Amino acid sequence: VPELPEVETTRRILEPHLLGQTILHVEHTDPLRYKNTKRAEGKTILSTARRGKYMIWQLEHKLEVIIHLGMTGGFRFEEASHTRIKALLDTKTLYYIDPRRFGKWWVVNAGDYKDIDLLNRMGPEPLSNEFELNDFKNRLKQRKQKIKEVLLSQEVVAGVGNIYADESLWMSKLHPQRPSNTLKPTEVKKLLESIKDVMQRAVEAGGSTLSDQSYQQPTGEMGYFQFEHHAYDREGFSCNHKGCKGVIEKIYVGGRGTHFCPKCQTL
Ligand SMILES: [Zn+2]
Image 1 (tube, rainbow, N blue to C red):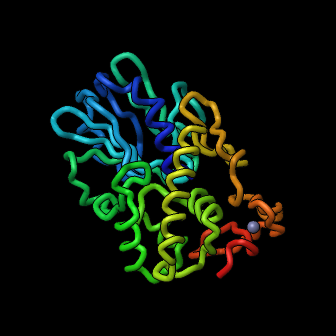
Image 2 (image 1 turned 60 degrees about the vertical axis):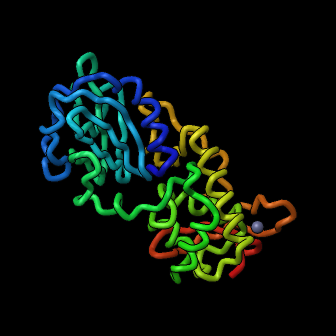
C-alpha cells in the first residue's frame, strides 16, 4: 500500500518527465474513478507536489490533477498489465497501473478539495518544519483513540500508513493500543523523532516493496526499505532493540494487522 515514501518516490521519478509537458489525452474507461480528466487535456504541467499519500500535478489555468494510488496503484514508463490509464503527453506516454482498482484521480480547481475532504483535514507533513512538538502534543492530547489509529487517521500527521505506523511505534517503544491522550511528553517527542527518521530513511530507500511485489518505482525497480523493517511483517522474529528478548507479534488494531514487540512496547 503506497504511503508517503512510495508516493514521494513515485513523484520524484515522474517529475522530470512531467514538467513542461502538455497533457494531450487521458485515456481510460472509468469516469467514476478517474474524475473530470477531460479538464486536464490541453493543459501544461507546471509543477508537482505531494500531500500525505496524494500526488498533485499543478497545471496551467489553476487546475490540479490529484492522484491517490489506493492499494496497488503506480506508474510505469512502458505498457504493463493492469494498465488503467494512458496519459499521453507531448513526447511520451505514462501508464497508470492498478490491479485492485482502489486508486483514484480527480481534476479540480487548485485548492478546491470538497470532493477529497481528507485533504482539508490533513495534519502537517512529517518531513516539514510544520510537524513540530507543541502542535503534535496538542493534537495527540485531544484524542482518546489508540495511538496507531490516530496515526493512520492522517489528521495529526500526514502520510503515515500501516507500515510506517508500526515502524515508528516500534522505534518509540510505544504499544500501538496506547490511548493517544496518555502519552507522556518524552514519549511524544520520541514518537515525533521516530516518524521523521523512519520517513526520511524510507524516502531515501525508494519506499518498501513487500512480498506481494505490488509497489514498484516507475522504472520497474523495487523499493529497498523493507530490508530495514523492524516490526512490519516480522511476526515471529526477534526484536531488534538492543538487549530485548522479545519476539514480534501480530495483533489487529482498528481492523489493521499490527506488528509490535510485547516486551519493549508495553501497555
Ligand atoms: Zn523488544
